[in-house]
Amino acid sequence: MINHSISFIVIGRNEGFKITKCMESILYTVDINQISDYEILYIDSKSTDDTLTRVQEFESVKVFNISGTTNAAIARNIGALESKKDILFFIDGDMEIIPETLQLLYTPAKGLINDFVSGDFEDYFYDNTDNLIGFKKRHNLKHDTYQITTGGLFLITKNLWNGIGGMKNKFKKSQDFDLGLRLSKKGHKLLRIKEVLAKHHTISYNRNDRLWSDVLKGNFLYTKPLLYRENIFNRFIFQYLAREVTMFFFILSLFVSINLKNPMYLVLYLLLVLIKLLYKRKKVKGNFWSLYARYIIFDVGTFLGFFLFWPKSNKELDYVQLKVAEKQK
Image (cartoon, helix red, strand yellow):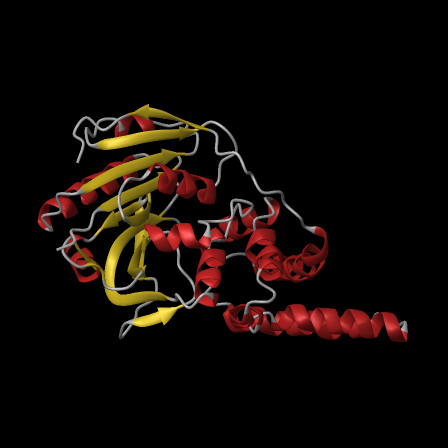
Protein backbone atom coordinates (compact mmCIF):
# COMPACT_ATOMS: atom_id res chain seq x y z
CA MET A 1 0.00 0.00 0.00
CA ILE A 2 1.41 3.38 -1.06
CA ASN A 3 1.19 6.15 1.52
CA HIS A 4 1.32 9.63 0.04
CA SER A 5 2.93 12.71 1.56
CA ILE A 6 2.19 16.41 1.14
CA SER A 7 4.16 19.68 1.12
CA PHE A 8 2.27 22.82 2.12
CA ILE A 9 4.08 25.59 0.22
CA VAL A 10 3.13 29.09 1.34
CA ILE A 11 4.39 32.25 -0.37
CA GLY A 12 3.98 35.83 0.77
CA ARG A 13 5.21 39.34 1.36
CA ASN A 14 4.11 41.73 4.11
CA GLU A 15 1.17 39.54 5.10
CA GLY A 16 1.02 40.61 8.75
CA PHE A 17 -1.85 39.04 10.72
CA LYS A 18 -2.92 37.08 7.64
CA ILE A 19 0.16 34.84 7.70
CA THR A 20 -0.65 33.83 11.28
CA LYS A 21 -4.17 32.85 10.22
CA CYS A 22 -2.73 30.93 7.28
CA MET A 23 -0.26 28.89 9.34
CA GLU A 24 -2.78 28.17 12.08
CA SER A 25 -5.26 26.92 9.47
CA ILE A 26 -2.67 24.56 7.96
CA LEU A 27 -1.79 23.06 11.33
CA TYR A 28 -5.47 22.68 12.17
CA THR A 29 -6.07 21.04 8.77
CA VAL A 30 -3.25 18.57 9.36
CA ASP A 31 -4.67 17.70 12.77
CA ILE A 32 -8.30 17.31 11.64
CA ASN A 33 -7.35 15.18 8.65
CA GLN A 34 -4.83 13.10 10.62
CA ILE A 35 -2.03 13.79 8.15
CA SER A 36 1.27 12.56 9.56
CA ASP A 37 3.62 12.72 6.57
CA TYR A 38 3.80 16.40 5.70
CA GLU A 39 5.98 19.50 5.74
CA ILE A 40 5.27 23.23 5.74
CA LEU A 41 7.49 25.62 3.78
CA TYR A 42 7.21 29.40 3.76
CA ILE A 43 8.98 31.42 1.05
CA ASP A 44 9.13 35.15 1.72
CA SER A 45 9.66 37.87 -0.89
CA LYS A 46 11.58 40.42 1.20
CA SER A 47 8.89 41.38 3.71
CA THR A 48 9.45 44.65 5.56
CA ASP A 49 6.81 44.15 8.27
CA ASP A 50 6.54 41.52 11.02
CA THR A 51 5.64 38.64 8.68
CA LEU A 52 8.93 36.75 9.11
CA THR A 53 8.79 37.16 12.89
CA ARG A 54 5.29 35.72 12.93
CA VAL A 55 6.18 32.74 10.73
CA GLN A 56 9.26 31.81 12.73
CA GLU A 57 7.09 31.37 15.82
CA PHE A 58 5.73 28.16 14.27
CA GLU A 59 8.13 25.32 15.11
CA SER A 60 7.19 23.02 12.23
CA VAL A 61 7.70 25.57 9.43
CA LYS A 62 10.78 25.78 7.21
CA VAL A 63 11.38 29.44 6.35
CA PHE A 64 13.16 30.74 3.25
CA ASN A 65 13.80 34.33 2.18
CA ILE A 66 14.41 35.33 -1.43
CA SER A 67 17.59 37.41 -1.70
CA GLY A 68 17.43 38.03 -5.45
CA THR A 69 14.61 38.98 -7.80
CA THR A 70 11.18 38.33 -6.32
CA ASN A 71 7.83 37.33 -7.78
CA ALA A 72 5.24 34.63 -7.10
CA ALA A 73 6.60 32.28 -9.78
CA ILE A 74 10.11 32.40 -8.31
CA ALA A 75 8.75 31.82 -4.79
CA ARG A 76 6.70 28.81 -5.85
CA ASN A 77 9.59 27.35 -7.84
CA ILE A 78 11.82 27.64 -4.76
CA GLY A 79 9.17 25.96 -2.63
CA ALA A 80 8.85 23.08 -5.08
CA LEU A 81 12.63 22.71 -5.31
CA GLU A 82 12.99 22.52 -1.53
CA SER A 83 10.00 20.22 -1.00
CA LYS A 84 10.52 16.57 -0.05
CA LYS A 85 6.98 15.20 -0.50
CA ASP A 86 5.14 13.83 -3.53
CA ILE A 87 2.11 16.19 -3.42
CA LEU A 88 2.55 19.99 -3.60
CA PHE A 89 -0.12 22.22 -2.04
CA PHE A 90 0.48 25.85 -3.07
CA ILE A 91 -1.08 28.49 -0.84
CA ASP A 92 -0.86 32.28 -0.79
CA GLY A 93 0.03 33.76 2.58
CA ASP A 94 -3.25 35.67 2.81
CA MET A 95 -5.38 32.51 2.74
CA GLU A 96 -6.95 30.29 5.41
CA ILE A 97 -7.44 26.63 4.51
CA ILE A 98 -10.80 24.94 5.16
CA PRO A 99 -9.79 21.55 6.66
CA GLU A 100 -13.00 19.71 5.78
CA THR A 101 -12.51 20.47 2.08
CA LEU A 102 -8.97 19.15 1.83
CA GLN A 103 -10.12 15.61 2.58
CA LEU A 104 -12.31 15.80 -0.55
CA LEU A 105 -9.17 16.39 -2.62
CA TYR A 106 -6.41 14.50 -0.83
CA THR A 107 -5.97 11.60 1.57
CA PRO A 108 -2.68 9.99 2.60
CA ALA A 109 -3.95 6.60 1.46
CA LYS A 110 -5.17 7.56 -2.02
CA GLY A 111 -3.32 10.81 -2.76
CA LEU A 112 -5.07 13.36 -4.98
CA ILE A 113 -8.41 12.70 -6.70
CA ASN A 114 -6.87 14.32 -9.80
CA ASP A 115 -3.26 15.25 -10.59
CA PHE A 116 -4.17 18.97 -10.63
CA VAL A 117 -6.96 20.16 -8.31
CA SER A 118 -8.39 23.08 -6.35
CA GLY A 119 -11.63 24.35 -4.83
CA ASP A 120 -13.57 27.57 -4.62
CA PHE A 121 -12.46 30.70 -2.73
CA GLU A 122 -14.26 33.06 -0.39
CA ASP A 123 -12.76 36.52 -0.92
CA TYR A 124 -12.83 38.65 2.25
CA PHE A 125 -12.27 42.29 1.29
CA TYR A 126 -10.52 44.80 3.57
CA ASP A 127 -9.95 48.55 3.44
CA ASN A 128 -6.56 50.23 3.83
CA THR A 129 -6.74 49.93 7.64
CA ASP A 130 -7.51 46.18 7.62
CA ASN A 131 -11.21 46.60 8.38
CA LEU A 132 -13.42 43.93 6.81
CA ILE A 133 -15.85 45.53 4.33
CA GLY A 134 -17.42 42.51 2.61
CA PHE A 135 -16.97 39.05 1.14
CA LYS A 136 -18.17 36.84 -1.72
CA LYS A 137 -17.41 33.53 -3.39
CA ARG A 138 -14.92 33.79 -6.23
CA HIS A 139 -16.37 31.17 -8.59
CA ASN A 140 -19.69 30.30 -6.92
CA LEU A 141 -19.80 26.90 -8.59
CA LYS A 142 -22.91 24.72 -8.68
CA HIS A 143 -20.93 21.59 -9.54
CA ASP A 144 -17.33 20.42 -9.93
CA THR A 145 -15.76 21.52 -13.19
CA TYR A 146 -12.56 21.34 -15.23
CA GLN A 147 -10.88 24.70 -15.94
CA ILE A 148 -7.85 26.05 -17.75
CA THR A 149 -7.12 28.66 -15.06
CA THR A 150 -5.67 28.17 -11.60
CA GLY A 151 -5.04 30.95 -9.07
CA GLY A 152 -2.82 31.04 -6.01
CA LEU A 153 -4.36 27.96 -4.40
CA PHE A 154 -3.98 24.50 -5.92
CA LEU A 155 -2.62 20.99 -5.38
CA ILE A 156 -0.53 19.15 -7.94
CA THR A 157 1.59 16.01 -8.00
CA LYS A 158 5.30 16.74 -7.90
CA ASN A 159 5.80 14.54 -10.96
CA LEU A 160 3.39 16.65 -13.00
CA TRP A 161 4.91 19.90 -11.70
CA ASN A 162 8.42 18.78 -12.64
CA GLY A 163 7.22 17.42 -15.96
CA ILE A 164 5.85 20.81 -17.02
CA GLY A 165 8.93 22.63 -15.70
CA GLY A 166 7.20 24.51 -12.90
CA MET A 167 6.28 28.15 -13.41
CA LYS A 168 7.92 30.49 -15.90
CA ASN A 169 9.51 33.08 -13.66
CA LYS A 170 9.59 35.73 -16.39
CA PHE A 171 5.95 36.27 -15.38
CA LYS A 172 5.82 38.86 -12.60
CA LYS A 173 2.03 38.43 -12.77
CA SER A 174 -0.31 35.79 -14.25
CA GLN A 175 2.20 32.98 -13.86
CA ASP A 176 -0.67 30.81 -12.62
CA PHE A 177 -2.68 31.47 -15.80
CA ASP A 178 0.32 30.47 -17.89
CA LEU A 179 0.77 27.29 -15.87
CA GLY A 180 -2.89 26.38 -16.33
CA LEU A 181 -2.70 26.93 -20.07
CA ARG A 182 0.44 24.82 -20.48
CA LEU A 183 -0.97 21.99 -18.38
CA SER A 184 -4.27 22.10 -20.28
CA LYS A 185 -2.38 21.80 -23.55
CA LYS A 186 -0.78 18.62 -22.18
CA GLY A 187 -4.20 17.23 -21.24
CA HIS A 188 -4.18 18.18 -17.55
CA LYS A 189 -6.95 20.69 -16.87
CA LEU A 190 -7.54 21.85 -13.31
CA LEU A 191 -10.36 20.00 -11.53
CA ARG A 192 -12.06 22.63 -9.37
CA ILE A 193 -14.57 21.25 -6.90
CA LYS A 194 -17.52 23.38 -5.85
CA GLU A 195 -16.67 23.36 -2.14
CA VAL A 196 -14.74 26.29 -0.64
CA LEU A 197 -11.11 25.35 -0.02
CA ALA A 198 -9.90 28.67 1.42
CA LYS A 199 -10.81 32.06 2.79
CA HIS A 200 -8.86 34.73 0.94
CA HIS A 201 -8.11 37.94 2.87
CA THR A 202 -7.45 40.71 0.33
CA ILE A 203 -8.56 44.04 -1.09
CA SER A 204 -11.11 44.26 -3.90
CA TYR A 205 -9.73 43.42 -7.34
CA ASN A 206 -12.11 46.00 -8.81
CA ARG A 207 -11.01 48.93 -6.65
CA ASN A 208 -9.97 51.82 -8.85
CA ASP A 209 -6.66 52.38 -7.04
CA ARG A 210 -5.72 48.71 -7.44
CA LEU A 211 -6.62 48.74 -11.11
CA TRP A 212 -4.56 51.88 -11.75
CA SER A 213 -1.67 50.40 -9.79
CA ASP A 214 -1.62 47.53 -12.30
CA VAL A 215 -1.43 50.09 -15.10
CA LEU A 216 1.34 52.20 -13.57
CA LYS A 217 3.44 49.14 -12.65
CA GLY A 218 2.89 47.60 -16.06
CA ASN A 219 1.41 44.45 -14.51
CA PHE A 220 -1.16 44.15 -17.29
CA LEU A 221 1.69 43.56 -19.74
CA TYR A 222 2.22 40.16 -18.10
CA THR A 223 -1.50 39.40 -17.81
CA LYS A 224 -2.25 40.16 -21.44
CA PRO A 225 0.42 40.53 -24.17
CA LEU A 226 3.07 38.26 -22.61
CA LEU A 227 0.53 35.58 -21.72
CA TYR A 228 -0.96 35.70 -25.21
CA ARG A 229 2.39 35.57 -27.02
CA GLU A 230 3.82 32.76 -24.86
CA ASN A 231 0.74 30.64 -25.56
CA ILE A 232 -0.08 31.73 -29.10
CA PHE A 233 0.02 28.12 -30.37
CA ASN A 234 -2.06 26.84 -27.46
CA ARG A 235 -5.68 26.37 -28.55
CA PHE A 236 -6.93 27.24 -25.06
CA ILE A 237 -5.60 30.80 -25.32
CA PHE A 238 -8.51 31.63 -27.58
CA GLN A 239 -10.79 31.54 -24.54
CA TYR A 240 -8.83 34.56 -23.32
CA LEU A 241 -8.63 36.28 -26.70
CA ALA A 242 -12.39 35.99 -27.16
CA ARG A 243 -12.79 38.56 -24.36
CA GLU A 244 -10.58 41.12 -26.12
CA VAL A 245 -13.34 42.54 -28.31
CA THR A 246 -12.34 46.19 -27.93
CA MET A 247 -8.63 45.47 -28.47
CA PHE A 248 -9.29 43.72 -31.78
CA PHE A 249 -11.64 46.52 -32.79
CA PHE A 250 -8.87 49.02 -31.97
CA ILE A 251 -6.48 47.13 -34.27
CA LEU A 252 -9.08 47.08 -37.04
CA SER A 253 -9.88 50.77 -36.59
CA LEU A 254 -6.20 51.67 -36.55
CA PHE A 255 -5.43 49.87 -39.81
CA VAL A 256 -8.53 51.25 -41.54
CA SER A 257 -7.65 54.77 -40.38
CA ILE A 258 -4.08 54.41 -41.66
CA ASN A 259 -5.16 52.85 -44.95
CA LEU A 260 -7.82 55.49 -45.65
CA LYS A 261 -5.81 58.27 -44.02
CA ASN A 262 -8.82 59.17 -41.90
CA PRO A 263 -8.41 59.05 -38.09
CA MET A 264 -12.16 59.40 -37.59
CA TYR A 265 -12.52 55.61 -37.76
CA LEU A 266 -10.84 55.45 -34.36
CA VAL A 267 -13.86 57.30 -32.96
CA LEU A 268 -15.87 54.10 -33.47
CA TYR A 269 -13.39 52.31 -31.24
CA LEU A 270 -13.74 54.98 -28.54
CA LEU A 271 -17.52 54.59 -28.68
CA LEU A 272 -17.22 50.82 -28.30
CA VAL A 273 -15.03 51.24 -25.20
CA LEU A 274 -17.66 53.60 -23.79
CA ILE A 275 -20.36 50.97 -24.32
CA LYS A 276 -18.17 48.32 -22.68
CA LEU A 277 -17.64 50.49 -19.62
CA LEU A 278 -21.35 51.28 -19.29
CA TYR A 279 -22.06 47.55 -19.42
CA LYS A 280 -19.50 46.80 -16.68
CA ARG A 281 -20.21 49.89 -14.57
CA LYS A 282 -21.83 47.98 -11.69
CA LYS A 283 -18.86 45.62 -11.32
CA VAL A 284 -16.09 48.22 -11.33
CA LYS A 285 -15.99 51.11 -8.86
CA GLY A 286 -14.20 54.39 -9.38
CA ASN A 287 -14.21 57.55 -11.45
CA PHE A 288 -15.95 56.86 -14.77
CA TRP A 289 -13.45 58.69 -17.00
CA SER A 290 -10.50 57.27 -15.10
CA LEU A 291 -11.78 53.78 -15.86
CA TYR A 292 -12.42 54.78 -19.47
CA ALA A 293 -8.80 55.85 -19.86
CA ARG A 294 -7.59 52.63 -18.25
CA TYR A 295 -9.50 50.47 -20.75
CA ILE A 296 -7.93 52.36 -23.64
CA ILE A 297 -4.44 52.00 -22.14
CA PHE A 298 -5.02 48.26 -21.74
CA ASP A 299 -6.10 47.84 -25.37
CA VAL A 300 -3.31 49.93 -26.86
CA GLY A 301 -0.72 48.53 -24.45
CA THR A 302 -1.72 44.94 -25.17
CA PHE A 303 -1.37 45.47 -28.92
CA LEU A 304 2.02 47.18 -28.63
CA GLY A 305 3.24 44.91 -25.83
CA PHE A 306 2.65 41.79 -27.91
CA PHE A 307 5.51 42.91 -30.17
CA LEU A 308 7.63 45.06 -27.86
CA PHE A 309 7.44 43.61 -24.32
CA TRP A 310 10.12 40.93 -23.83
CA PRO A 311 10.96 40.39 -20.13
CA LYS A 312 13.89 38.11 -19.33
CA SER A 313 13.64 34.88 -17.36
CA ASN A 314 15.38 34.88 -13.98
CA LYS A 315 17.28 31.61 -14.26
CA GLU A 316 19.00 31.91 -10.90
CA LEU A 317 16.95 31.28 -7.76
CA ASP A 318 18.74 33.34 -5.10
CA TYR A 319 17.48 32.61 -1.61
CA VAL A 320 18.55 31.66 1.90
CA GLN A 321 17.01 29.38 4.50
CA LEU A 322 16.28 31.31 7.68
CA LYS A 323 14.85 28.49 9.75
CA VAL A 324 14.64 24.71 9.68
CA ALA A 325 11.60 22.90 11.01
CA GLU A 326 12.19 21.96 14.65
CA LYS A 327 9.66 19.16 14.34
CA GLN A 328 10.51 17.29 11.16
CA LYS A 329 7.76 15.12 9.67
